[in-house]
Structure formats: C-alpha cells, structure tokens
Length: 194
Image 1 (spheres, rainbow, N blue to C red):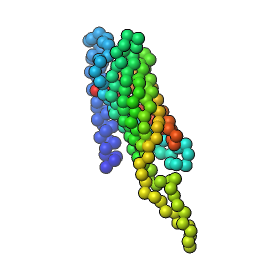
Image 2: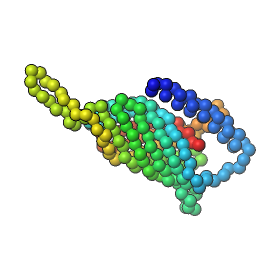
Image 3: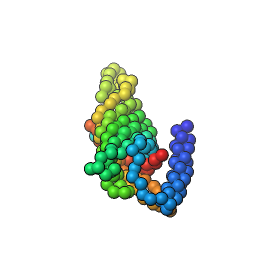
Image 4: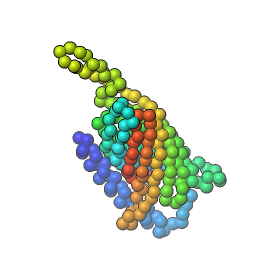
C-alpha cells in the first residue's frame, strides 16, 4: 500500500511540475515582474531524507519525506519583499515514525535562492523504547521491551532552495538539514508552490 502511495504521489508531482513549468514559462514571456502578494502562499515538498543518530537512542534510517508549507511576505520597506514568515510540517516515511512542526523565517537571497531557518518540535515514535530495555536473568537472558511512546524534542531546520530551469520547466530543488539532540536529518527534494 505504501509503495502505491509513493508511486501516485510521484506521478502527481511530475505532472504538476510539467504543467506549472509550462504556465510559469508562458507567464514570464507575457507579463512584467510583479512584487510578491501579501497573501499566504502554500506549497509542498517531496524528497528523500537520511536520519543519522547522534546516540544509541535510535538507529540510522532513511526514506521518503513529505512536507507542507505556508508562507507570507513581511511587508516593510527595509526588507524589500524578501523576508517571509513561514510555517511547516514534515514527516519522514521510515521504519520509525518522525514528524516535525516548525515556524520561522525565509529570506530570498536573490531572485532564485531562498534560505529558511525554522526552529520547531520533532516527534518520534521508535519501534522499541531503547532507554527502557530491561534485562531479566533466568535460564538465559531475556530482553523485555516497553511499549514505544511518542517522544518530542526541539530541533532546528535549515533549508536552502534554488529555482532552476531544466528543459524549459521551472524546478525548485532543496537541500535541508535538521538538527536535534538525538539525531540529524539530511533532506534532498523538490518544492512545489500553489
């Protein structure tokens, strides 16, 4: 079922990217450059994440990632429509569940590049609660595992995105890094705005 979900999401993303590229290309050639809207803009991110554990609390893992974003320009002359307030939620489809929610700022470095810094909370549910494993002695050793619970911790998410044109289509690849006490997460993906 999960594989079917990934295939459908990837197909939808590909079709949407092609259509958006054609619309954006047509828009560029037929209109003047306009300042960003003061309304909320929305988007999603599809990518691949690698999670590197910082201790024995969890194991390294990797898988598909999905994020939803909302952003709005901060209207002030000193920012020249280049600073945005943003919020997002991300999930990584790995063996152990990982979800993050964050609020922060995005700064448009130039017409094609945006840097985001977003502090937030990470929630994790590990398949075993590694910190509460108990050893029982008897005829042999037996490990008794406590049922896993959701855990949370602070994490900082930093991301850079850069618009590129490939075969007359506009793409918005990203490279992201999230750091918390228990792990670091590295993501490569694409942003899509609507």
